[in-house]
Structure formats: structure tokens, C-alpha cells
Length: 321
Image 1 (cartoon, rainbow, N blue to C red):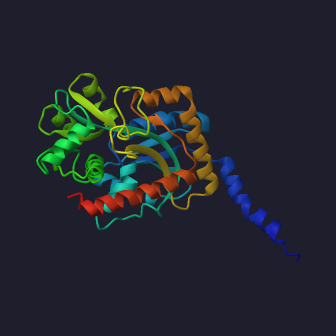
Image 2 (image 1 turned 30 degrees about the horizontal axis):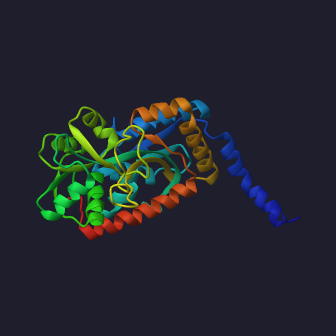
Image 3 (image 1 turned 90 degrees about the horizontal axis):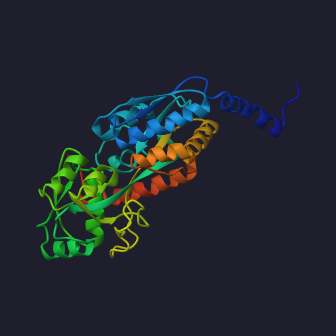
């Protein structure tokens, strides 16, 4: 019997994956979102998967699995068959913050998921009450330094993105504020507007209407450049805190072991969807800035953010309790 040469054997082994990629998808795709229906990630996922479904010829079924800060839904995805028919819509908190907030995790953020693509970012900023005496980041930090531990800030709960965002600000500005946790980002924003707490770091999609209505004042945005919707609000960099950026993001992931050909197909479809003018308009309308990436770039950025948040969470002793 004639043996196959190395090149022929490699080509033969590649046939199943080639065929799999060509036939994929031949049935609907399930997307697990470890967050509540109506969240920014959930809304963005429905917009993007609608466009992807039109292009791929198969529908997407969204399954919300909220609970335990995303741990339950993420575990379901990590244990799913890696065939491309169960994927995840995750925010940055699930992959880069939550793993550092509890000693025992049923999955590993860096090894149990295959990066597919970033989908979009939700920009953030520092807000105070609409008639607050603080009109700039510099004024607020000066007041905080003059009265260590006396001023307070609201967050969406222990270990929430608002909590961690403020921890980063305190670290950079060398200030000490009192933490007041609320049951969600919106209650924390309302508390600032009501004068219960002085300040909060918030996703702008959550607080845009309160800013526009004069209930909140936006001191600075945590983006590299000023935002078109708030052209008169400076960045943290312009406000004396150079190279400070902070945002939330929504991304698609798959179980580890998903064939590279399928990951590549999903990546192409995500990036095409977020470049579609109608889809971009819908995302921007709900406060999400479309940003597709390669799977490799998304994976690299996730690892870097994972380490950044690990350090601040450990240094500040932040827990989910």
C-alpha cells in the first residue's frame, strides 16, 4: 500500500474542517448572554445578530442567563459543544473583572473561551449633580484631597464596573473616597442626581438623559478624544489625568476548541455587520460605538485588561461581597 506524503496527509486532514466551514451554519445559532434582557449588551446583541442572520441565512436565538454577575451563563457557554452553534455575547466585566472577585470560579476566562470579535464599546464619564459646586475634574480631585475619605461615590454594587472605574480614578489621582454601593448602575446615577452621593463613574448610555435634562453634570469623559455628543466636555487626559481610558465593551466569544474556520467565519460576519450603515446607526442610537476587531487583537486586548483589573482589584481589596 502506498503511503501518503506529508503534504497529501495535511491536505486530507484539512478536508473535514474545510467542509465544516463551507456548510456552516446549517441550523439556527444560540447566543448565551449572561446578563438580563434589556441590558446594553442584550440590546446590542439583538441588533447585530439580526444583521448577521440575514447574511448567514440562519437565525440567532438569544438566551439570557442572568445571575451571579454572569458566572452562571458563562459556565453554560464554557461547557457547550464547541461547534459554532452555541456562542456567547459577553461584556468586559465577565471576562476581565469578575474572575478576580471570587476565589472559586467554575471556568477560566483566558482558556475556556475562544475570542471571536469585539462588537462595540460603551463610553464612560464622571458625573456629579447638575448644580454641584464641582465644575471640573481638577476641582473635584482638589476637594477630595483636602478632605480624605469625606466625599463619597455611588456604584452599581461591590465589584461593579462603576466600583472598579472609581478605584482606578482614585489610584491615579491619589484620592480617597467613601464607597456607597447601590443595586445597579441606574440607582447609583439617580442617587448622584438626588444629592445622596457626590460623584459616580457611569456608562454614558445610562446617564445621557439625566445629563441632557440637567440633572447631572458630566465632568470628563474617559475616551482618547472628546465625544461628538458631548463636544464641550473634556477628556480625562485634557483634565490633568493623562492616558486614562475606561469603557465597557460587548464582544462575541465561543467555547474553547471551536474550529478556527468557524471562528473566522463568525469574525467576518460580526465585522461586516458593525460596518453596515443601518446597523451602525441602530447601535449608536442605544449608546454603543461599533468596533469590530480581529479575533487575535480582541484576545490580546482582553488579556491586557484582565491583568490591569486584577491588579487594581487586589490592590484595593475589592470583593463582590
